[in-house]
Amino acid sequence: MLGSKRIFGKQNIVTVMAYTDFTLERLETEFGLRNRQEQIFTKILPIQPSPWLSRELQLAEGLPLRTEKARSEWIVAPILKELREQNDHFFTIYSGENLSADSSLGLNGECDFVLAKDIQTFNLNYPIISIVEAKKHDLEIGVPQCAAQLLGARIFNEKKGVHLEKLYGCVTTGRDWLFMVLEKDLQIDQDIYYLNEVDVLLGIFTQIISYYRTVLP
Image 1 (cartoon, one colour):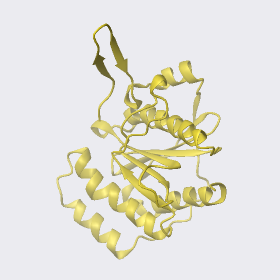
Image 2 (cartoon, one colour; image 1 turned 60 degrees about the horizontal axis):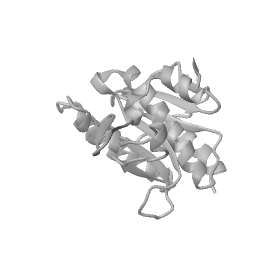
Image 3 (cartoon, helix red, strand yellow; image 1 turned 90 degrees about the horizontal axis):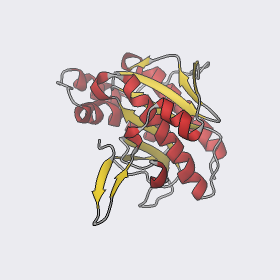
Image 4 (spheres, rainbow, N blue to C red; image 1 turned 180 degrees about the horizontal axis):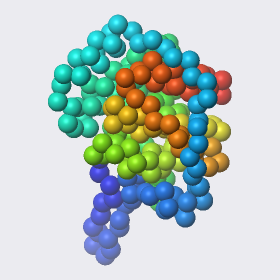
């Protein structure tokens, strides 16, 4: 994923910032976004994966998943497709989509995955969950990027007249999953969830989707 880039004009050079350029410190300085670590999910109802998903993940175990692209195709995407089926296509999945909220603030750039309410349109509407693929198998590296994308999603939605108290995000290596939620501040989950408990992961995502069912128009 690309970060900031330089655009050369005849008289000046403009540096365009992106979600990948943020740090937690910069998010606090520029947007007043404080963060804290705490338990986000206290009651999780595990959901058993379908035979299809179990088979897909079993096949993935025997593959050399050395790149983000491989982990995306063989682990993350199947889980998201399963969730979409289990939740009656309430949301749709965008992969590699640009979420342009406010380029002047650096809230712009390509997203690994964005889940948005499915309203049968070609363009992205109502982004509700941002999922970032961790670089170098390091969840911590992806946290500021995911937080910035959640800020971008908030602005994007508000421009369309949709005000959501909570926006959820997740950073994943495919095997490890770290969730966060943007409210007034950014809450980063103190717990990490693992692929070998995929029923718990499905339960968490379904709990999040259930929240959006009650608040989205």
